[in-house]
Amino acid sequence: MTQATTPAPALQFSDDQAQAFDALTEQLRKAGVDLGEDLLHPPRGETGVSAVIGKAGSGKTLLLAEFYKALAAAGVEVVSGDYESRKKSEDKRTLAILAPTNKAASVLRLRGVPATTIHRILYTPVYDPEYERIADWLAGEGEQPEIEGLPEDALARAAAFYAKNKSMPGALAAAGLRGSDFITGWKRREEPLDIGFVDEASMLDNRQFEDLKEIFPTLVLFGDPAQLAPVNQSGSMVFEDLPEDRQLILNRIHRQEADNPILDLAHALADPQLGFEDFERMVEDKARQDDRVVWGQRVEVDLMARSPVLVWRNNTRIRLINAFRAVHGAPEDQLLEGEPLICDGLELPLKHRKKRLDLEARGLIKGAQVIYLGPGRKPGFSRLHVMGAEDPQVSAASIVKIEKPDEEEPFIPFAARMGATFLHGAAVTIHKAQGSQWDTTQVFAPDIYAAARMGRVEAGQPLWKRLAYVAITRAQERLIWVVRNRLAKPTGALRVDDLRQVAAPTLTLETQEEEAPV
Image 1 (cartoon, rainbow, N blue to C red):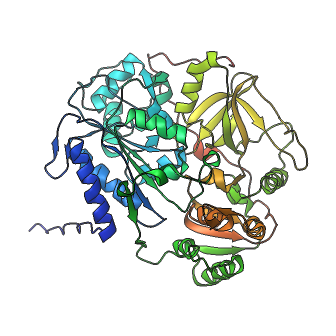
Image 2: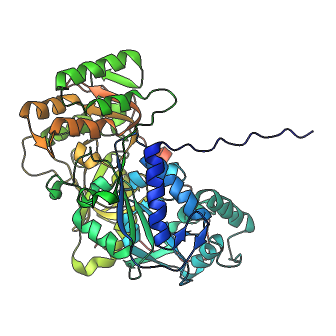
Image 3: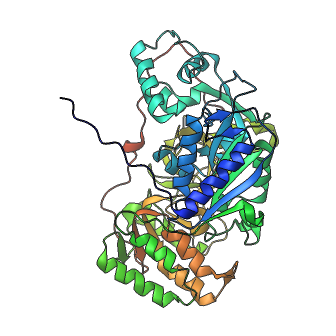
């Protein structure tokens, strides 16, 4: 006798989630995508921009994920950024799910949502024709190819991976191939798409917003009004200027099965009567009750290589970085394998636009978290692992700047003439941490106290509260509230062995040679 299986319980929306879902469903229906009937019609012109706005834990990501499932089930093609078939149909409807950073996109991908970065949608890839045959087959656009040097079991691994994860670089890697060989270049997108969902929309600046509106006639922003606005935005976020009927507010906080102490602390900051000392007493009380909150007496140096300490002031950041390098015995004239870096942009002239597009599309955008793997094969090149990127292994001409306390000019252990620029990443400012999440997050409390003492206000709220809110909500599992200016000793050396990729098999397909320093 076959045992009956119990069906999974139906998802229950809160009232505000249900209202937002209905409003967006109606917007999509006007755009020609009828989720009620699973019907797709040709595009019907612009439907404009809407925003789903709510604080941490309000269910924004859940709503985004449910819309993705509904749209995919209705037959909408999801453009992930890593592959886009050239076989176009005028009647085909498209969806792209975007995030401002690799880390933010990777958080969504871990939830089963095929998100990519804004740069990967603004620029479209140029494919190697041989690999394109594999990708078309995986995407259901062609027959299974026969490629010399690539056995059927490798193709089967690729198909199994793609069916589960919808990641073309991941599928190619499962077959023993590299996405960096598959994509030979990048160009600015010329043809628009249909529907765009943007997570972490509080990080969008006006220029990015205008770029996205050019590409997507239907655009939905998912943002948190309690976060920090982009530095060049005068304290405002792009969704705050939308008409009221286009702002869908999520007020209810959805906690996990067991109350989440980190979210409790985040939402306590909304109390206008709460002072810094009161908040710290709350943190200390939570630490006694729940091991997901830690009242830290020192910075844990072992965590800094993969989860930077979050600070407000630059001088604090620089001191912590130099302390991290000192306890690891890092020489001044070189980097150790395993040291963390933060991409600070690209220093490339206009004539190297192709290389710029390639690096940005591969994840080397401002704010990207990177682990140094060692020197490249050519002078000035570095081998890098871009955290959160789908194809993380990159070799690039690099300029590494290590800032020193009380010194105006940074120390540069080595550098190419031009290329990707990096700052050390053992500590980062809370502004740069937006859009990222880590299992364990360390927040340097003396800096938050300094902001409280200054009495600064941003968008009607004390700055220290916005800083504290953003910082503690970067923690997925555990928050360490560091209250003393101390650094623990490392328990072991820096490591990179867990980041190394398995070497690809020898194939007849030509691989790209590493470019000369640009």
